[in-house]
Length: 227
Image 1 (cartoon, rainbow, N blue to C red):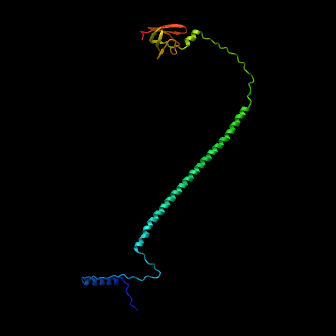
Image 2: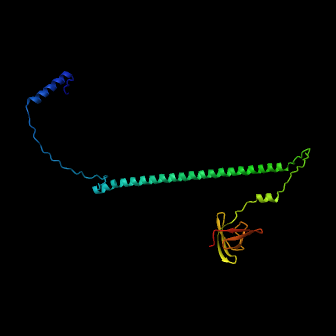
Image 3: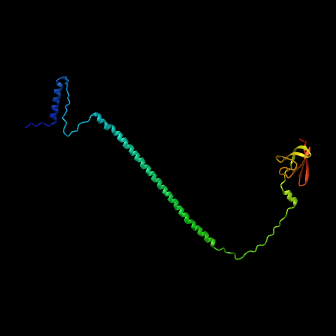
């Protein structure tokens, strides 16, 4: 039977002081370096263990992992875009169907309203118009009509400008041509031709003027000299 160790605190403190005294009382001690050779011991492979692959082959799966993740991410993005496009097309088709249904509903309502209006108009047209019980006798009204006298009619007619002789080209025997100023227009006329819309016509040409005619009345016009 082994002796029983004391478990008092004072005993262990005393033992610790004795150990410290032994350590520091011996003086300085030098530590000698010891070379230790470590050799790798290859354990025989067990029956169930799989042989290790070379390091060059171990790097291939690690390099393929990012490519696989990239492919999966790209497929996920494409799938999301496809689903979003299909959802948008479905919403557009639904909105189009709603619009067509609303248009058809409004058209049916308009067709239902038009026959009702037509029936009301026919009923109103078929209703007999009640004649008044007493017809008032209207007295005839006499309106005096005053005929205009010829001088007044002539005065009301628009006045046409009279031709103004600008120059003549005399060839003798009353022949030649004359140049007239009618309002803002310059007109040339030969004997027997009308002078614009003035109603006058050229009768003859003299060396110093011309004779014009309208309604049997003659008028002589003169200029400063012959051309």
